[in-house]
Length: 89
Image (cartoon, rainbow, N blue to C red; front, side, top):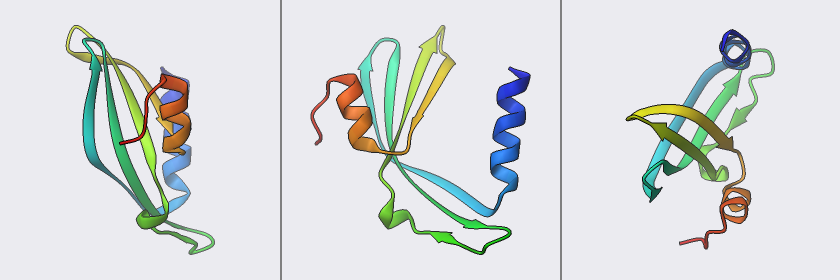
């Protein structure tokens, strides 16, 4: 878990601002929930801006006993739908 924390901290440190907004949650079954999300960010070094209108991400939450046991982040929502055998919409 320490490696995950370190990696996430390194990722976030590259950005001046980083925001994730979940537009919708979909319960897939008793153990998985899919969040359909957008994100926006501005790079610290480059000032590059990523506009939330251009991003269509998905976050898959695996639940165990009411707690998140695994988290899968898809930067491409279509890939998440394909991997999960879901149709968009």
